[in-house]
Length: 393
Ligand SMILES: Cc1cc2nc3c(=O)[nH]c(=O)nc-3n(C[C@H](O)[C@H](O)[C@H](O)COP(=O)(O)OP(=O)(O)OC[C@H]3O[C@@H](n4cnc5c(N)ncnc54)[C@H](O)[C@@H]3O)c2cc1C
Image 1 (tube, helix red, strand yellow):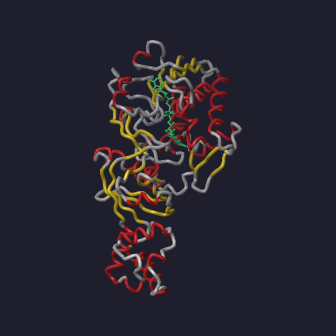
Image 2: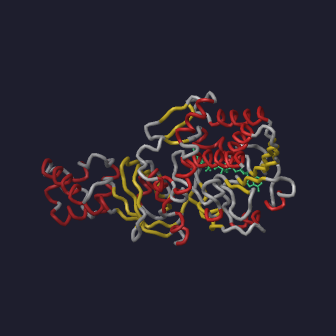
Image 3: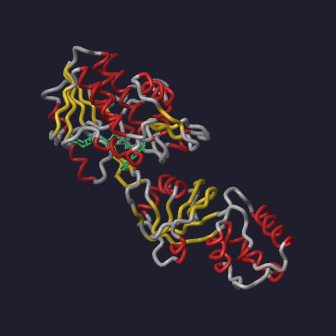
């Protein structure tokens, strides 16, 4: 059996290892256009490699995988996040689980993962051919009987030419996992401010995400914003990255809760200035900004706020609104939403429905996740599943 795997990324290399372990006699060639295999894994998680997640707090897979949750449910039956932890530990990698449920190697060094995968491929006799850009998948079938496409996210539709002649349905690529630009907004002066428990949403839509929010010098970032960008990736692309962002600075708090919090502060400190006494989770600089935004004078005392002032404060705390105009990706984890449509593949095997012998694994498919190790988990699980299907065939 001659197998070509397109792409020496996380999915391709994992697939190669698992395939060679099952079929030692197969010729397995990994064709990589770049000069270094696993170049992206080397920079994941800021060079620390967030290789999976405990999935604690994820009540439905669609929370982690806005695209591809149903496929993930199927592939996790064969290679789950727990299997990932066991796999790397069995290979001698000590892992640590952070409070945010993300797994990293204890060495905090992504290169440890890269070296391990490269070593295993070498030991098993996988051929890694670098500098080999595949232009046509169809042509590869002249040389190989099985082809696994693990070419990663294809950010531009021109890249889909590699699929010519295969009669595949594709979903237009758009970026996911980006930060929001808020040009002209004075909030940017508060750059570096972090609020741990917020809810960010897009006005007029159902898109909503919880988590820490970070004010940056160009707008807003942090897990809540990255998650929101993932949920709303296609909607935002179609709106040309123009939207109204609403921030609830008190996390899950509703109007009654906010009113009670403010009332308690006001009753305890009637003669103190509003700007000097803020609700617990709001940093003082942000509070001053929110008070000003609520049109309350900087020297006003709590006793002077009145019911209208209170209403404005509650509204700003719960529905603080910003005009998003554009997005940025700066050294952050980013992925492509879109790719080869899942309609083309058999969920049980990852084989192409209309082209036997052709398999897909990883971000090349229309599968992507929020940050937190879920994207690499998808790559390991799909790489594993493709290897298993090929070996069973
Ligand atoms: C900066 C950054 C940090 C990230 N950090 C994390 C993290 O900590 N945790 C996490 O879960 N996810 C992270 N991600 C996302 C994660 O890296 C990807 O989702 C994952 O690597 C996808 O794996 P893949 O094997 O499908 O694709 P890739 O890892 O992108 O590999 C695809 C490979 O195919 C090659 N290729 C493409 N086209 C061709 C062709 N025509 N011929 C030959 N070769 C080709 C590419 O050169 C590449 O090497 C991060 C992403 C970025 C950009």
